[in-house]
Amino acid sequence: MATSEVTHDRWSKRRELEVDVVIHDGKHQPMRGLMINISIGGAYIEMGAPQPEREAAISLDFKTEIDGEPQYYHMPAKVAHVDETGIGLVFEDYDADTVEALKRLMRSVLGQ
Image 1 (spheres, one colour):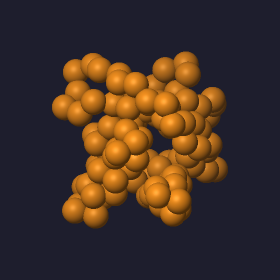
Image 2 (image 1 turned 90 degrees about the vertical axis):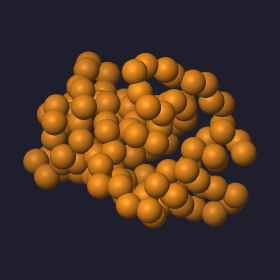
Image 3 (image 1 turned 45 degrees about the horizontal axis):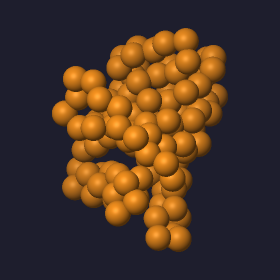
């Protein structure tokens, strides 16, 4: 998986990846998108219409493979911004399991 860094005013570097996701916002049928970068704090999802509104509470479901084993993620998040190509998310409701899952995913993206 090719990676590169995307830096902005964030407390964690974003890493590029491509993972299919399903977004639930409680207003629309489940929506599909493509996660193109992720950090411990959030992600950017490319998607068409409809899109969740800014500040909407959503959940993000996706699957990756780490060391040949499928890993399933269910991440509560808030929509930080919306643009013509997708949505920027901030992950919410962290617990120890969520942080560990994100760390494993980030290590996988980095090829470590």
